[in-house]
Every structure is written in structure tokens, then in C-alpha cells.
Length: 368
Ligand SMILES: NC(=O)c1ccc[n+]([C@@H]2O[C@H](COP(=O)([O-])OP(=O)(O)OC[C@H]3O[C@@H](n4cnc5c(N)ncnc54)[C@H](O)[C@@H]3O)[C@@H](O)[C@H]2O)c1
Image (cartoon, rainbow, N blue to C red; front, side, top):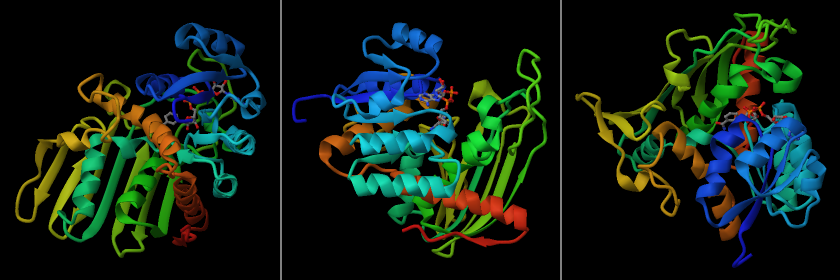
């Protein structure tokens, strides 16, 4: 592949592909958008105009079996991820798949085992690992600047309409609600920062029926959680607290919502906020939390082609997902986060559901 571009297919031409996967491909001249797949022909035609030259198809098997394609990005509803990923892996494609990898831990694990056995690069689209202040917080923690890690805390609040969520509100299609959609990212970056989660006690709650679409058309009511929460212990001995909700009135904030993630060590504390991802809050023992700009070397991965000064800060770091996938392919190394991270986060999320159903603490299966 020395002088050739990595030829990427997008499978699922919906919101997230338009928001950051296609822009991520556009800024990286080591790759190109070579094909687009979506069963919605009207959307496919729209994307032809918006995204430009590429092969367009309604059938993902064509992508899986196309020898001219190197990699795929799967950005379809959750229940389709596994079959599409397994077909593309069988066709020898490198795969980035959206979170949650599957509609259960068992599906996610099957995807990881298949990718590992075939030897293709695999990546889970855990976006927030790439936020500048998250990258810097990780550095502070791993370099020992915060001392011994003791507490992890995450709050993710959205103020969404109480109308239908489409496929996202049915268990068979989505797996779970806020837990799989939002909290799963926070489970992932907690494990990246603090190491594996050992045990959880969790709860979920559905408040609203979502039995009408935005234009008032009746639909089957929601089966999934609007709110999810857990407390957990890490194998290191540290502890964590997570809360997420789509119904936090007053936290709309132009669609970005509210996010706060904090680590408290024996020497100091640091905070990442999605609403202000180029800044970090840091405080040392006996002092006060102070806000500062993330140092330049943590604004993006070293060779990432994007200019951190271009675009909306809470959007543009997401383009580094594609940078990581392409870097892993051209450098012949594993992508991070991989399907193993995706499956591991899903093992924790499923333990939260089991914990609430059985009203007890659950030990999370050891993944690594
Ligand atoms: N990483 C993130 O930050 C992030 C953000 C948003 C969404 N997501 C995830 O991305 C995925 C897609 O979310 P979205 O908001 O773009 O949804 P969406 O509903 O806007 O788009 C999904 C698209 O997939 C298409 N599709 C359905 N079945 C298909 C198939 N068999 N082959 C090809 N295309 C198919 C649909 O027609 C639709 O256009 C979900 O898994 C979601 O959890 C991740």
C-alpha cells in the first residue's frame, strides 16, 4: 500500500457519518472515501451530492466483497453492526465500528474474536478518548502528577425531546438506551484511565413513553432507559461513579449537553469537560481547581493533519478517529481503542443491567 491511499467505505450514511467520519476522511490525505452504503436510496442520492465521487450501493455485501476497498466504517443501527462487521472481516477489510459494538456483550465478543482471528485492524469509535483535555488528563494521571488514582466521576446530561428516538428506543434494535448510547463511552474512558472495572452496582430508569414521533405520529413506546447510573470498583482498588441521562432539562446547550469527568488522585484532581475540551481543570492538595489551556502537544495526535484552531472544539477532535484507524493500517499496528475495548465496555454495561434486574453487585468478567 506504500504509495496508495487507504480506500475507505462508509456503511451507514446517517448522522454520525456526516458529522465526523466523512470530515475525518477529508482532512487525512493518506485515505479517501471510496464507497458509501445505505439501504435508504433517497439518503444515498443526497450523499452523492454532498460527499461526491465514490461507489454508491444499498448492499453491504458488495462492500465486504469488493477487492478495491481496504477498510470500512460501520455507522448503522446497533442491531446491524455484528453481521456487517463479520461480513467485512471475512472479506479482509479493516473495520472501525460505532459503539456499542453489538446489542449484547456476547455479540461484541464475537466481533472481537473474528477480527483477531482474521488479523485485520479493528477499532471501536470511542470518540471522547480523542478530546484534547481527555488526552492531557490521561497524561497527568499516567505520569503520576495526580498521585495514586482513587476516584473516577462522570456525568453526561442531554436535554433531548421526549418524542420517539426511532430505532434507538427498541431493545432488539439498540440493546439499551442511555446506557449503551452515552454511558458506554464513559465506561470506556474510565477503564482507559483507571484500568479494568472489577465490580458494579447499577440502575436504569425509563421516564417517558416516546410513543409519538416529532410530527405527532403514534409509534410503539420506548423499551429502553432514559437514565443510567452505576457505582463501581476498579481492580486497582480505585472507585467510580457514573450518571447519564437524556432528560436533563436545561442542559441542552446547543445540542452539546453537559459533560464532566474527573479523576481524584492522592496528590491532585483533574477534570475534562466536553463543552470546553481544549481546557482542563487541575487542582493540587490544599489548593483550588484552576482552568488552563491544554498544552499544544496534547491538542491532537502528533501527526494528525487537522489544525486544532479550525472549527468548533467540541466537534473537530472527533476527526482523529479516522486518523487513528488509518495510522494503524499504514503503520501495521493495532488501532486504539480496539474491538477488545468495545467488548470490555459492553461487558460492564451488561453487568449494570444484570445488577439492576437482580438488585445486587455484579463482578464483571475479566476481559484481558
Ligand atoms: N461515536 C459517537 O460519538 C457516535 C455518535 C452518534 C452515533 N453513534 C453510533 O453510530 C451508529 C449510527 O448512528 P446515527 O446517529 O448515524 O444513526 P442514523 O439512524 O442517523 O444512521 C444510520 C444509517 O444506517 C443506515 N442503515 C441501516 N441498516 C443498514 C444496513 N444494513 N447497511 C447499511 N446502512 C444501513 C440507515 O439507513 C441510516 O441511514 C449507532 O450505532 C450510534 O450508536 C456514535
